[in-house]
Amino acid sequence: MHGAKAQAASVRSPAGLSHRSMCVRTSRWLLENKAQSYNGSKQFTVQQYFSHSSHGFSKHSREQYEKLSTMHKNMQKLYESIGNYFAFDPHAVSVEDFFGELANFRSLFLDAMKENHKKREMEEKIKRAKLAKEKAEREKQERQQKKKQLIDMNKEGDETGVMDSLMEALQSGAAFRDRRKRTPRNDNRRAVLERSRSRHNPNHQAR
Image 1 (cartoon, rainbow, N blue to C red):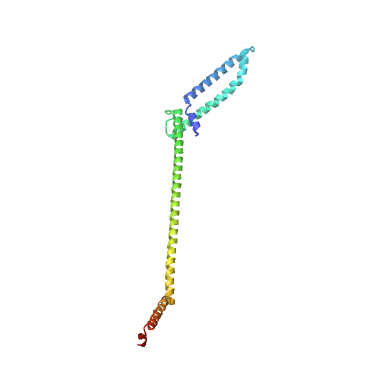
Image 2: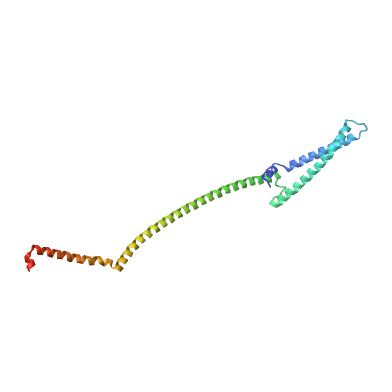
């Protein structure tokens, strides 16, 4: 049921509707009796003119009243069905009280739905912010890890290059070649010193 209809039903009293229905029926009955009494006159008077003019209106009003009466009876039956469905006594709880409570419940229910919707939106916003933060931290750690790996690879490359050079020198004998060259160099120096001494010391040369 729509909220507007429930709100409208909450201000409609079945007793008031029944009273209005009785008033309409009584007024229609008086009108028909008055028209019939005027219709009995032999001379065409104002009363006869009124009777003739009100005949169509009386017939139309009778049809409309019968429709309203049928609708009112159906409404009472439907309200009894509602009472059975919601497990309350339709004779103890008035229509305006029931629909007033129903309209109030609907209003509170809609407010709760709006509040839950706002709460879910806030939770989703916090969740998205948390995921974005975790992603940024994860990417930062990955960048730092890659940078560290690159530095380690460069260090390993330098050490590997030194070891490769040493192994190559050992295999080719270049590591020992410098030492062999150094030994004759010392002998040459001694020969030069001996010749220098011989020049300055003739006794040493005769000996």
